[in-house]
Structures are given as structure tokens and as C-alpha cells.
Image (cartoon, rainbow, N blue to C red; front, side, top):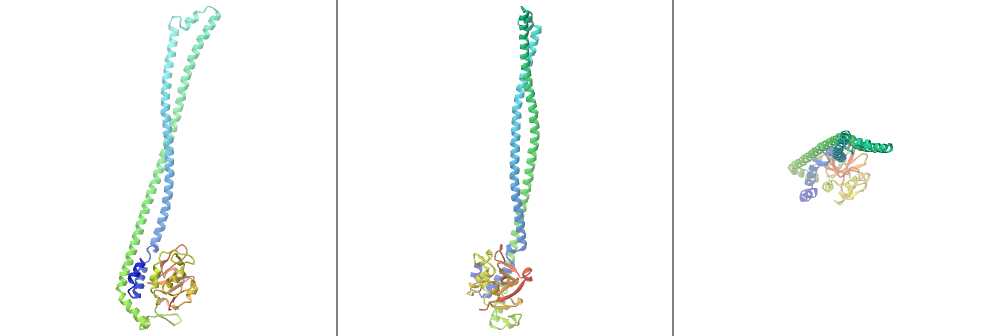
Length: 372
């Protein structure tokens, strides 16, 4: 964006370039606005919560599916058990009928095939013992069959009761897992809605900042003619009272390098790199050195050394292009007008615009104007 602004204003007086640049700077970078930064931090926090909830939801879904699968297996076993129990009841009924018929036949029939007839037909003691053993054997077999049928039915009944208990417990577990899944899903939806709301607020804040920047630029354009006249008078030396005075009483000549502001503006957003002095990364003095190099001015790559270049400027007389120093000469930036400056703050940040207030006001060391 700044390349376009600079190219379109090249034919205008230098003051036009840095005044318009200062107007955009006065609105501040949207992402540098404290309110936007706070909202972005909140959005990052909510996104972290969403990721955690999403992971929890996957685990809850797996637990629910596992419990449901086990419940289906139990219900399938119950169906099979029901079939077995029905068969056992049928066999038991048949065995009971057969045993009853045999007992009736023993005591009511009079033919030679009944056990009573068999016993009465014995020819000797040995034959009688043998016949009794045969009758007892037949009775024992009938009892064994009956006991097997009863035992099978009992086993199936016990198993069915166990399965019914297991199904009840499993259904309760499935309900608990479903409730947990639903609860996590609801919280996930709430956080996603919150994130969307925060993003909307950020977009609104950026739009307001952009609108404010445009309004400031329009206001500056209305004052352009006055600013050009004042600069012309200053360059001719006719407006002595408007020139910058230093603390030791000397007079700093008007700045010749206001255009350096537009150059520095091109690199807003470039990451801070310790020792960096190229568009791939800047430190504070590297940005100042590089911007002035594009104007044909060679500056050292060291904040303390840059302090010794040019002439001192009182804070009330700062002009765009002046070097501003902070924190015991530990930091430097380029003044852009409107009480703001452009700089590369520190590791983890990018080239940005800041105000001469707060920490920068408390640690302000002074300013220098490049004169040649």
C-alpha cells in the first residue's frame, strides 16, 4: 500500500509525502492497536480451548461407540439365550410328559411289558434280581435325562439373569457416555460461537481504524497548502521562529530527508532480526541505516554511533525523518510526525508504528536531525 502512496505522490512537494504518511501513521497499525491485540490474544486462547474440546469430543465419541458396541453384543447374547431357554423349556415339557406317561403305564397297564409284569414274571431269585436291576436302570436313565433338562434350563435362566443385569448396567453406561459427548459438543459449539464473535469484533475494530486513517488523511489534505507554504518559508530562512532550537541554544536546520519516512513505511510488518539491515529483517538501527541509505546517506549500524551523527533537535521541534532515541541509547526509530515514530522494537515483533508516550516517553533520550 505504501509503495502505491509513495509513487502517486512523487510529483508532489516533499512535505506532501511525509505529511500524508504521518496521517496514516497517526491512525496506527490495526494489528498494533492495543484493543485489537487484546482481542487477538483472547481469540488465540479460545482457539486453544476449542482444540482441547475437539480432542475431548473425539475421545468421548470413541467411548460412546465402544459402550454401544458392547451393549449390542449383550443384547445379541440375550436373543440367543432366549432361543436356548425356549428350547430348554420345550425339552423339559416333553421330558415331563414322557416321565408321567411312563409312571401311569407302570401302575395302570396289565400287559406283559410293564415293569410290574416284568417283576412278577421272574422264574427265580436271580431272574428277579436281574429284572429289578433292569427296572431301576430304566428309572435311573429317565431321572438322569430329567435332571439334565432341568440343569440346562436352570443354567440358561441364570445366564439370562446375568445378561439382563449386564444390559441394565451397560445401558446406563451408554447413557452416561452419550451425555458426556453431548455436554462436550455443546461447550465446543459455545466456544466456536465465541470465537466467531471475537473475530467479528476484531474485524470491526480494524474497519474503524481504517476509517479513522482515511479521515485523518482527508484532514491532512485540507491543510496541505498551508504546510507547503510553511516549509517553503522555513527553507528560505524567513520563518526563524519555526526552526528547531536545541537545548544548548544552537539552531537545527530544516530536515532535508522527510522522504525517508515513506521509505521506512514500505517495510511495516517486516520481522525484527538482531543485526538485520535488509528487507528480510531489521533491528532498530538497521532499519534507520537502510532507509537513509536509499536516500544516499550512509549511517553507521549502531545506535550509539547514530547518536553522534547530525545535530540535536528539541522534542518540541521534531520533524519527520528525525532520529529519536530511547532507553539510554539502547533503541532508535524514525519520527514520522503526529507524535509517532516507526521502528523495529525487539525480537518477536515486526517493524511498526508507536507513539511517543508511555514507556517511550519515560525512556526518551533525545533526537538527531541528519543534515548532510
